[in-house]
Image (cartoon, rainbow, N blue to C red; front, side):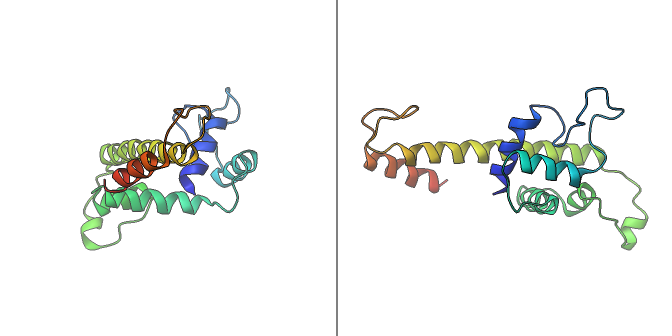
Length: 152
């Protein structure tokens, strides 16, 4: 669900650096001050229902950890305080590591979205000539492609 939401939001916010950019070009900062309000406005415009900012946090944390990002970096991305003994003696901000992890997440998210689009197009085309579909695509060919894709 969150991948679809982010794709719809991108149609509204454009290709800028921020998920929730400032609503006015002349704003003092390039992003919004209250992300919850911005998210609610954007989700209303894009017909997204039931999503929260916390869903985005959980999704980023989960996929970053799966991609091998160290827990301390995931925690710093999420803004968690490091209260254990080691954390007290580690003043490093992890800015480079956070940037690298989020760039990897962005690449992974685009790959996931592209794969979903491809599967969606293949499922909608069997035996029918539609825009974006090859005429004469057989359902067997689509099923075969789907099974190959699911093995990756």
